[in-house]
Image 1: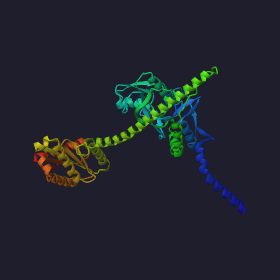
Image 2: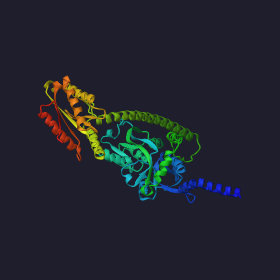
Image 3: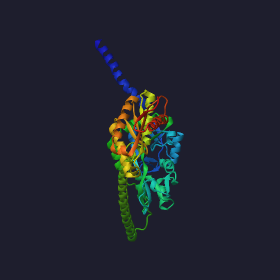
Image 4: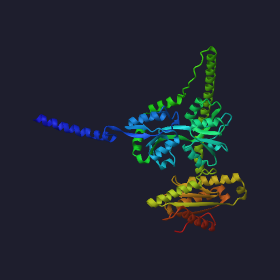
Length: 475
């Protein structure tokens, strides 16, 4: 009897252990079957993805096979004739997802997006003899061919509206039209362009530059099926890096060739020799153009590295004054607006100090080098005096602003007095400029323009008092 009760208790314990696992599987597999998800692709975008003999092949097909297993889904292809039709289908709900596309403001109106899982550069293709182009900015008045429905159409229309566009149905068709001279430059994906140039044997087409932005490809999910995004993201995050590398190597190294059917002819020695000669000549052309494409790809890599370095420099220059190295007007306004928002949320006060210089030495004022040295001396005095949390900027030509976050008026007044004493004690500054300084503390319901205007009134008061003094705005 005792053994029987022990057996019953053990059975209930086993049920309690397996119940959570059963519940998880029930959420993943419905009625013993995987959740079916319909999808559309670009049927003419090899090697990224394409439809060949009714079957989905390419990079996206291999990724979907991995994601299908990891997310416990069953993908079902809805065939389409063009990329435009695929976009239309997913928008209408005829297919639930598109596995490989870029995000854009227009697409976000009817699609939710997963995490990106594949990145690839876009390039500019032109006829031999075209000079290297520095992105879209270097195209000038040339006509640009681009596949209708690609994100690049929306990007160019927004940021380069002066460019003339020629819409094509696919990259393959666009390369053929480019070879005929129907437009000047084609925008395409590097792996797809490389494959089509070789397959179509377009000897006079070469890569002449890069096209921003690069592709960052993800799943687009019809908003009615937004619950799929979490499952897709989970699967994307758990794809082993080794398999990603294997997929890239496979499709980056293999050049797809379409099968060719030759009419059976008389088996004669003359025909055999002609065929052999043609094959040898064709192989030489392919080798030569592959070498040229590799060279252009290396040039693109060099341009990309140069572009990254210039972007870093541009980011610094966009926020700093080129003479003094201090923050510029735009950055100061942005930081002040952030401080005002913090004040409204947490009621932590802030102070603003405005410094204005008036030239008294005409010789130095008329000398650009001398004036710049004096402005640099002002910047150095400010940086030596203020705290690390304070923000110093050259607001206009001879006007500087110091933002003191979370600082009451008394503390910032002490800082301003020290700064005035430092600047008056500087030989070059005291002989070059008259210095006026005004300051104020942020009030309730006050925007930056109001705050700055009130501080400027204190600055004018400092001028009326004969310069060299710190005036505080009236409370």
